[in-house]
Length: 185
Image (cartoon, rainbow, N blue to C red; front, top):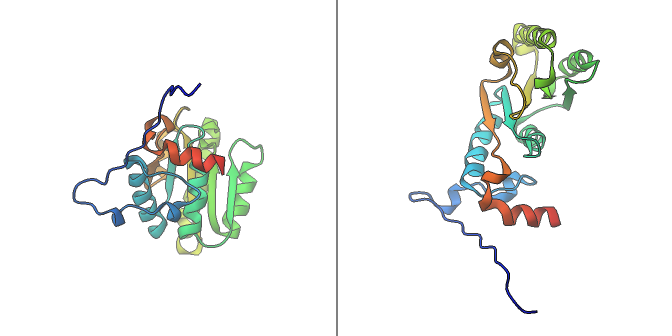
């Protein structure tokens, strides 16, 4: 009946010493949405990773956009085909071998679900890839659910030179309006 029950206010502030141009333009990272400080930090780190094609683990809660970020990293810095290897599938080892033989970018999903034996097998596969050196034009991106048991230390050391942490949605209140607008589109 004309009564206001609540309001949503979104305020964005550029930190001292930084110009607005220093922030990643939203279109540079589309369809990933975010202008919050945590997302700007993620975009800067991810841009560096894409330029250098570092072996990277993307860690975050379910639904935060880990796969989307991995696909975008491939679009920015990858070459060749993009292959997703699901580590929960019975034939994941064959998927890995096929992807490495083809080259390009390999995204490892659900690494945390591998058994101890599966983790050691993947360690061996990484070692084989490392021994191939420059002959293997493969960029590996691993997706790790932060709500699950992390991979063992031996595998973790091979999965990533750097880890990108995708902030939880509850920690991105600055991005609420952008997320809602994006979902509505």
